[in-house]
Image (cartoon, rainbow, N blue to C red; front, side, top):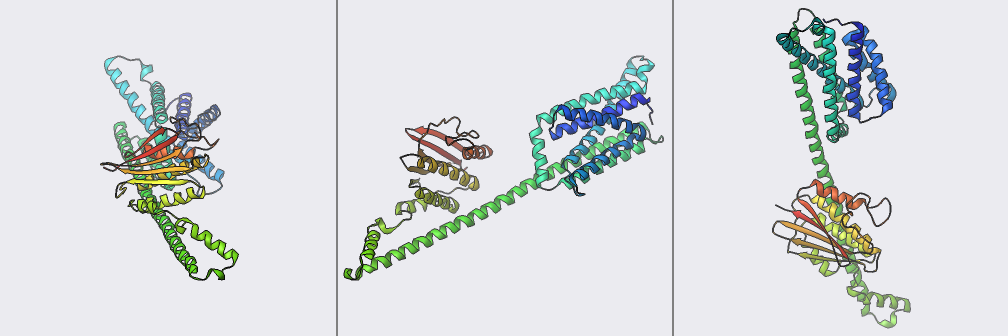
Amino acid sequence: MITLPIPVEYVVDSIFIFLCFLLYQQLISENNIYLMNRYVIYSLFWGLISLLFEDYSYILFLMFFIMWDSIKQKKINFDKGQINLLIFSVVIQMMLSLLCEVFTNLIYLILSKLFNISSFFVSHSFRSILSVFVNIIFVLIIVKLIRENYAKINEIEEKILSLKLNNRFFLMLISIFLSFEIILFVGNIQEITYLMNVTILFSFMFFAFLLCWQMVELVQSVSIRQKTINDIEQNRQMREYLTNIQEQYDDLRKFKHDFKNIVLSISADSKKNMNKDYEDIYKELVQQKGFVADLDGKTILELKKIANEPIRGLIIQKFFKARSNNIKINIEIVDDCIKFTKNLLEIIRVVGILLDNSIEEAASGDKREVRVAFIKNQDTIEVSVENPINHFIDVRNIFKKEYSTKGKNRGIGLTNVSEIINKNSNLFLDTEIKGKFLRITLIVLEV
């Protein structure tokens, strides 16, 4: 066991703790002077504790913050998200400290072979200070890497939280930390040589790295599986919802058809038996075109060309929404059968948003019309939604967040469209203004 002068040992231990806090601060992304000053004070305090308990002070260090988090959250089974990051920071710093010590000793061996270095440079104090200096450099490199990849790190943290894996990661990190402490304790026994101790530590570090890597892979796999389950459930719910709408619509048409026949059959009665109010109602019903308030025949024939029931149900739903606002929807399908085979949920979301925006824009002007076209090409299917322009529109910015012609805190829909398109490599968007109409076309690559 190497014994250092108390001042040198205090400085080394304080810097060790501070570097742990520095890594932790980067992982939680809270960069402010107040927090940094507090970590400096904590480091100086725990440096004193380290003089009394040596390597065991790190166990006390983590026990203190685990208890502090539990007290702060006022429950034993507390959220372990942030304490996991602190344990991870301590484990990384312990491994870095060992690497720096080995690196420094290697430099010393090389220099001792090449040069006749003085006793000061051979001293343990100098090598310990040099090791700390190298450690600081390594930590700064890791800090830079964390900042550059913070989005990916944050994504992994959110997945761990959403999948409720914090407790498992807590047990894994605590196991790694305690195992490392046991190896260090055993390494202080004089019978174990320095080379053997370093070999054991490096082997442990390798297996710890593999374990962490496997856990991250597990998180990714479970996350993908959960996303698939959620998508399947959403598709099932949407199919049920749209099927229900279709059934209600069919029932309504049957009722209106029967009601029409019943009312028209009254014409067989003598007109002299009708009172004035009844006669007025009868004439009004007879004069209605086709005596229907549902989809016209052309629209029904066009919609039958769409093979996907959810898409067809969506168009019907938006048709009723437009009609309630006195807006006419013209539907044109340039093929006998339109069938989407990929990204059905994303297509429904995009087409739904485009139709909502078009209906809302058409409702604000005099030309109350929306045009929808489905065009099938060799490898693509295009869905064009066109509406009259009643406001100035900057085509370059309409997909940017919060851009809207409808006032503040609006414009979320097209931003969502842009995000959906960016996440799917077979979906594309084309926007153009033709005369006084805005046309947005969703292009679906089917190959």
